[in-house]
Every structure is written in C-alpha cells, then in structure tokens.
Length: 547
Image (cartoon, rainbow, N blue to C red):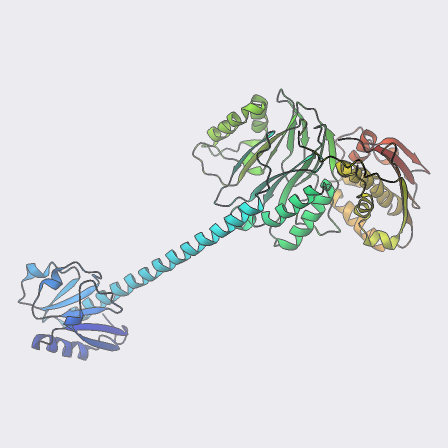
C-alpha cells in the first residue's frame, strides 16, 4: 500500500471531464503523493519523455492512447463501462473506475515503483555508456602514448623472434630491443606485477631510460641501477618489475646479463640442448633502494650457432585444457624439438595447441635471440681523433666510499676514450669485481661463505650496508694507465684493510656457490691478473680491441 507522501511528485493528465474531475478529487483526498501536478491531456502524447510517475484520466479513448508508448510505466484510469477490448491496446496499466480504495492505492504504488525503477536503470545505463566512452578514449590516448614511446623498439631485427600476448588490452610484459652505437645489441624482457593498464604504465619510464642509455653504449650494470632508481621512486610498495637485461657483443661471442626475479633464460645450441640456465641472482627492480641494490652482472661466452630464449612466468605457468601448468621441463623439450630459427612459428603453434581454448591468466612473452654476429653498422671512427696516453689515480677515504658510486665515477672519467664504448660493460664488470672485493673483504671484513646459508645472502648485504656506514678509517686506491699505442688499459686497485686470499674463501671451480663467479670472469676476460700484498692489491690489463 502506498504510504502517504512516499511518492514526492505524480503528474496527472486529464481531459477536464466530470469523470476526470471526480477521480482527481478522490486521488487528492487519498494523498497519493506529496505533490500532484495537474496537466491538460492535450499536453500528453505517446512518445513523451516523462519526468515523474504519470496517471492519465479520460472519459473516452481516442487513437492516441492506442499507439505504442515511449514510456509504458503509466496508469490509465477509465470509466468501467469503456470497451475492455479496446483498452487492452494501451501498453501501460489500466484501472477501471470506480474501484476499491485499496486497489487504487496498490495500482498507483506499482506504477510509481515501476516508473522509478526504469528511470534509475536508464540513468545507470547512461552513466555506464558515458564512463565506457571515457575509458575507451583514455585507453586510446594511453595506447597512442605507448606506440610513440615504443616506436624506437628494434622489433624488426632479423635475428630475434618474439611472441607477445597480453592477457588484457594492455600488456604488463615488456620486450625492448636496441642497437648499441658500436654494433652490440641490448635486449630487455620485463614483467610488471599483475597485468593490464596499471602495470603497463611502468613501461614508459623504463623504455625511455633503456633507449637513451643504449644510445650511449651504457653498461648493463649502470642501466639496471638507473632502472631500479626510477621504478623505486615511481611504483607503489605492492608493485615491482622482474627484469632480464642482456647485451650481446657485436661479434656475438660475449653475452652480458642481469637477471632480477625472472625465470632462467635458456642458452642452447643448434641441436636444442640447453648449455646454460641464466638464473635470477637479484631482486626485481623497484624493490630495493639505491644503497641496497645489487647491480653485479655476469658474462658468458657464446657461439654463433647458439641462441638464448627469454620468457616471462606467463609462459611456464600457462594452463592447458586440463588446467595443468606447462612448466620449465616441457618448455625445454619444445625448444629442443624446434631449435631452428625457422621453427619459431611451429614452437608458438605447439604452445597454442597446449593452451587450447583455456583463457590466459597472465601476459605471455617469449623471445629467442640468435647469438650470431649482430651485423649492425658501427659508426666509422674519425682517424684524426686520437686519445692521449694518461695515468689516472685516486685514493678514496671512508667518507668518500660512503658517498660516491665509485665504479660509475671512474667509468665517467674514462668515458671519453673513443675505444671504450664497445667495452664499457666488460670494464664495469671487471672494475666492480676488484673494487667490491677490496671494500667488502679488505675494509669491511666480510666473508662470502655466509652466502651459503639460505638467508645469508640478504644478511651479507645488510651487514655490508651497516659496516660501510660505520666505517671510520681505511682507504682504497685506484690507478688506471692507458697506453694509446697498444690501446691497452692497466687497472690497479689496492686497499689498506685486512689481508684476503681468495683461496681461503672461494673455490671458483664450484659453480654451485652463490659467489665467486666474478673472480672466474676476471680470469677469463682480463689479461695479466696479479694479486699481491696478501690480497690487498690486484692489477689486471685489458685490450680495447674490436668487439
């Protein structure tokens, strides 16, 4: 039953007949609404856009009332003697008059509720349409920005094949490719937390930094430091970016990489047999602050017949029709079955067959890069530009070590050497290794064997930060000599700390240890490696020859 004043406004259209006037008087007495607005029936028409619940009162039907109604949620009140069959053509509710008071109130209540519900649904529908159009417009703008930001992506490079399939409209995965100025190739595979528009927005600052630094032939280690700095400031606490970054030398024989939180990349030969699994040794980007972030990279030797497969966890966690994960073992078998550069599409087809019609639950990204000579044009060096022989020497106090990124600063000093650019990553790696050994084992007295403990790796770097902040004395000296005739660098790093013999702490032949790989690379990549003064001093040479 319609309660008094529950309906605020009701519009009544009537023909001003005696019948209509008597009905209106009775409805006023029943107080069916807080306000009743009386209107002439000539103002009513079937396709009217009504604003309030409406009652039409007429003593006689004409053709207007038998036409389709724009708003059928109306009540028509007629004299009881009007032809019932004819009144059935009215699309709304019909109430013969006179009738019981309770029935009158009930029918008005139903009509008002129906009208208000339809109006609310219509308003919601219009709001949804407006919001949908606004979201689509915003998506178009964001897509346009992404296309421009990634317009430099070297996706047409002939020696790489990619599969990038987002789980929603925007991809939370990212695969960037850029040539270096001297023929090397940079490849970045990243996976932001979640999928869709929110994680995709992290691609903008990351791609800008990637392309700008690739243009300058910046080392992989320096790149990830910058990436982490930007994302750590940008991303919320519950969001991060797993990342695999590599640089392939121009001759295809050296691959330098950094893996933070990504599945292990697979290096395999032309027979498909996996030679190396490049596992994650670092936290994802955006998690740690600058002081705690570890930028140490690794380098492996490759052959022109080798290839490397990069992929996000969406590949190995892809579900089949039976809701079973693909898994790493199955992916390796597929790669071994289809290892050829011309078999990539067949490999993709097998992955699609495995998934069937099962919807994607995560973004899917797979890239296979051939480790052959890149064939990228290198700029011709101006023969008139000649570097002078020089010797650079610096001694860093405890205060300097606490405030300066030493390795980056030294590379900045050497950065104007014309021949350095193609070797920047390797020089960074070698210099970082000997400097960190001098700092961590010489001045700070850290023991790498604590990394063997499951929680020791994190504790090691926590202790490193604490001891460095508390360091009061001690120094590290760095000397760099350049011989322009031989195009040869000789680097010496010494410290005033504790004696340190690498044989006491590290067995470089044990590849399962979570440490020691840097010393192994020193032996592989450096010339004339010498330790002296009980481990406090190390020197090595390096030829700045063509990559």
